[in-house]
Every structure is written in structure tokens, then in C-alpha cells.
Length: 444
Ligand code: UGA
Image 1 (cartoon, rainbow, N blue to C red):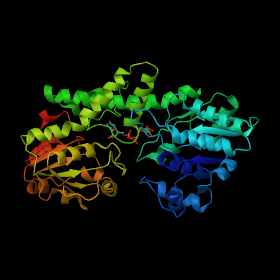
Image 2: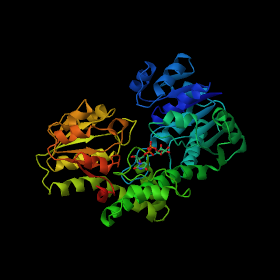
Image 3: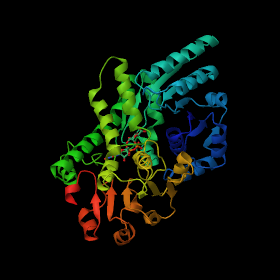
Image 4: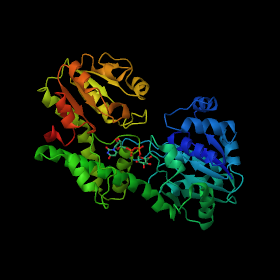
């Protein structure tokens, strides 16, 4: 079976590499010529553990190819995935122009039956729009005889573990309205459906909603914990103890209940917004999700407020060492990263930032360019030089075991603001360091 994938972003590229590695012949199409040229030359456009090797091996084996030639790719692939971007419009709705443009292109060039699969995260009802767009173009071509079906197959990969998530998925959601398409896609996913049946077949609308509901409930867990953390600070409790206490209940579980400085990335913020918008569009008020979003916006400011209080509102002229720029470890992605909000607030207050991140410094340079109030340090401990305080924004492994003695000796104020609760207050205290975390300041 030959597979065509439109879009060489995160989702498309990882899925393509993983399908190719399972033995399929995969053609990746992108309209961005420069990107395709770089991929052809063997460049890996994103930092994702394991992806480079997969791309290289499968390109060498000629199972994985990259092209801008959409017509040829459409003629080749029996199953065509749409994995192009769906950025947020200003009102929070997902912008579907790229998805629908691909649908039109497929209909323009298909000559044989095709299954078109939406893989991008798209609002409920999008696959129906894709179907309508294909029907419209086929009609205009006078080729209504061509058989096609549209399926929804949302992805659940996490940045930083995308290859593993894709190779060994927890579940494979296939939304189809025709049994024969369900069967074809079941066959396609057979190499990944080992040990026990991970395929959950459902109708297209439910599959589309499953994707949003999954991200929204995870974002809700995080915002809930962040709210509890703020309350714990006031009540004198330690949220880390509370986390362990509640996580031990299997109905709650330990995952995604880590309080922090807000969720970021390309998915949670966008998907929560889109779900709120979808609800609004049908006259329904998604109250819980609106609160989740508000809480997250507050949370991204939370550490800045603690810093401001500690320095009695006098931040102008101060310098802050910052560990972590990416929205989470193991990625160079800074989209919606809490570190950005923090840096921008510090700059607005007249402070300078000295930052280090194991992977995201180039991305930071790309976003902010050269500026006097930002120094990007090649070495982790260089951020401490001349700094008033240290801030931890991303829990990279490299930050977990710091040299507390050196920190104490170097900072002008003995204080760490830990946005991910990775340091033990008792240990920091032993070195004479004040530690402010998230929902555990009484423990310091
Ligand atoms: C998320 C989902 O976890 C994936 O299942 C989904 O497929 C993906 O979105 C998507 O829709 O494409 P991702 O955005 O890569 O994946 O990152 P996560 O690991 O989920 O982290 C999201 C944010 O939540 C990060 O900023 C992280 O720091 C934060 N987080 C996570 C917390 O603050 N606390 C937690 O307990 C967990």
C-alpha cells in the first residue's frame, strides 16, 4: 500500500517516517519548496529524539520521498493523509484554509478511488467540509464517478516522544462512516496494532471530537492543579504532598497533575481555544474550558508576581538568570511557552534576562533577535553571572541537579524561583537559598 502525506510539519513528518519504517512506501508533499529541498538533502527540520535516524534510514531505502509535486503524489498514494497546519484565527477558531486547499487539490488530480484521511487536529465537522470540497471539485471536473471516502484519524503524539508515541500508540482512533474504509485503515495500522487491539473504530464526528476532548481534559487537569497550588500557597499546604496524596487514587492517577507555570506548546492552548469556539458557534457556553484557559493565562504570570513581591516591585535594572525556554523538555519548541511570558514581563519591568536552554536557544534568537536585555548563554551556569536571582522555567534533565553551592556564591540574592517544583526546599535551605515554587512556599 502506498501512502501520501500532505504536510511535513510535526505530525506529517513523524507519521511518514514511522509508516515508512514499517515498510510502506510513503510520499510526503509540501508546498514549501525550501523545506522539501532541505528534507531531500537529509536535514531534520525539528528537534525530535529518534526522528533523524528514521528519516535517514528510510530515505536511503527509498521508502520515504519528499516532493512538491502534488498531482504525482495524489496519483501514487491509495490512502492520502492531510496533516497540514490549522493555525488559530483571531477569534480562536481553527483556520481550515490549508486543509480545504489540500482537499481541492486531491479532487483536482485523483484518477482512481482514494481514501482521504484528516490527521491534522480539526474541529468537529471538518471532515464533512473536506468531503463537500472534494465533491464540489469532482463535480466541476465532471468526474463524479470517482469513488472516495473521508476518514478522521487524529494523532496523539507528544513533542519530545513523538516517534515512540507513533510507533507504540496507546490507541488508534479511526473515524469512518463506511465499513470498507474502516477495514482498509485497520489493515494500514496493523503493524502498530500489536499485543492487544488498540484500534477504536467510530463515526467521523466522534473521532474528531475525541481528539479535542482528550487534550481538553488534560489541560483541565493541569489548570485544576495550578489552582490548587495557588490555594496551597495561601493555606500553608505543600501541593507536592497533595499531588502524591491524590495521584495514588487510580481514578485520578499521577499523570498530568504536575503544577507548573502553565501549559504551552502548539496543542493545548490552540485546542482549548478551538473547543470553546466550536461550542460558541452552536450556542453553547463551554464554562469549564473558559476557566481552564483563564487559569492558564494567570498561571503564566504567577512566577513573575512572586518575583515582583520578593524584590518589592523593584525590578528595573536587575538581571535574572533563566533556565529553560522551551515549553517543555526535549523540544526546541517555544510556541506559547510560559518562559516567553515571563521574559516579556521582566523586560517590560526593565529587567535583563540571561537565559540557557539545551535546545531552544536558536529558536529564541529567531523569535526575539538581538536585544540588549537578553543574553543567551552557551553554558548552563553562565546565566548566574551578575544575576540577582535564578528562575527555572523548563524541567530539563540538565537542570535537575544544580550546583547549589555555586548558585549561592554567584547570585547577588540567594533566591531561586522554581516554576516546575523540581528542587527540594530542604536541600535549597541547607545551602542558604530561598526557594519559591508553585504551591509549596510554606515548605521553604
Ligand atoms: C499534547 C498531548 O499530550 C498529546 O497527547 C497530543 O497528541 C498533542 O498535545 C497534540 O495535540 O498534538 P504536547 O503539546 O507535545 O502534547 O505536550 P505535553 O507533554 O502534553 O505538554 C503540554 C504542556 O502541559 C507543557 O507546557 C507541559 O509543561 C504542561 N504540563 C504537562 C504541565 O504543566 N503539567 C503536567 O502535569 C503535564
